[in-house]
Length: 350
Ligand code: NAD
Ligand code: TYD
Image 1 (tube, rainbow, N blue to C red):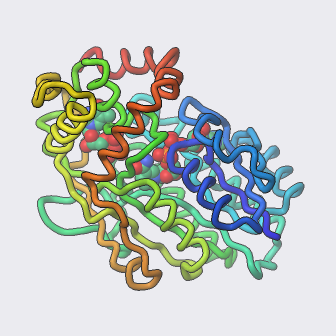
Image 2: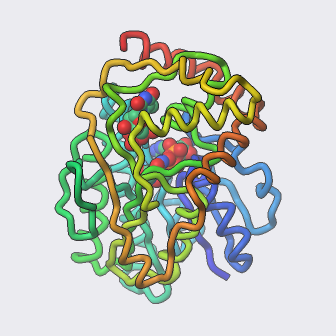
Image 3: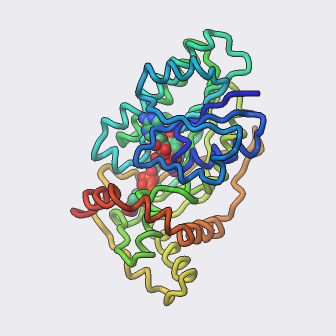
């Protein structure tokens, strides 16, 4: 029996990781630690919350004494650390929250793990989940590899880069058994509609303008979230200690082409006139410091762990649109209250 702590398990990717770990590793006890910020939602886990090997713990990774006590009590053998402030636009309007959670929170977890095991790390593992945004921005060609020098350019990516460096420093200095991965943009069910894909689907549904930053020429590499969760399972179990694995979809899209595809898929699924939702596309003021292109070379995880993306993008996107159409109650709940004021602040001057 192993005690595994997953942080940020009530968020988008974390909820898929919790679900996968519960279902594929029934001999583990899974503890999901989450502060339930605006991005965390226990409704993301209703299908698995009754499983006997699952426990939810509400708490903040920034609270050092709480974290120390928690590790003393449960003596986690493994940590899969996803809790983070994750939205670039919010990091532009309020960088400090990103420093607290992403940097201080990560250090609190590293310290607590180190102190309970005190150098006896046999069979233990601390897995830090990161992003491709730490590598900066690409021009028209090239890919991020695990050796690409870090060049973060938003407060979000700078805070993630800092946490990555700290995790590696604890490996080097204290011999902590860590592993890391840096993934490209994820899409799928349960993503908070502040990120491009669910925001656009929700606006199409409600016939609201679809805000495309700048000229819509920025490129992102999209990966289905369940493929990411599978990669996380594989790296957690098979990744080499101290190593980093890049994870990506081999699937680059310009924002404007992606938004048009979302319009067409949603029109089809809602039986709307072909082309009608494209009329909602509205070019708005660009994001400050907007990274132009991200693209991942994921040959290391493909070769070492035999992982590759399983889902064709158009199929995955169609399933995703259908999920948001079918889950009106979930959308209504997360887009009520605080979301409305966020949306107004973020988009009224654009
Ligand atoms: P998310 O914003 O949907 O979820 C984050 C979760 O962390 C939420 O449940 C939130 O309540 C929790 N949380 C935030 N601050 C906390 C704190 N102080 N203490 C405890 N819990 C806290 O994020 P996501 O998109 O699921 O991303 C998860 C991880 O994956 C992050 O580390 C992110 O950097 C990384 N990542 C995300 C993407 C992506 O496309 N979304 C891509 C690559 C890497
Ligand atoms: P986002 O989903 O916020 O992810 P990230 O910034 O981490 O890549 O944004 C994806 C891309 O879509 C990014 O280039 C910014 C752009 N974007 C828009 O054009 N309009 C929007 O309303 C949002 C949220 C994002």
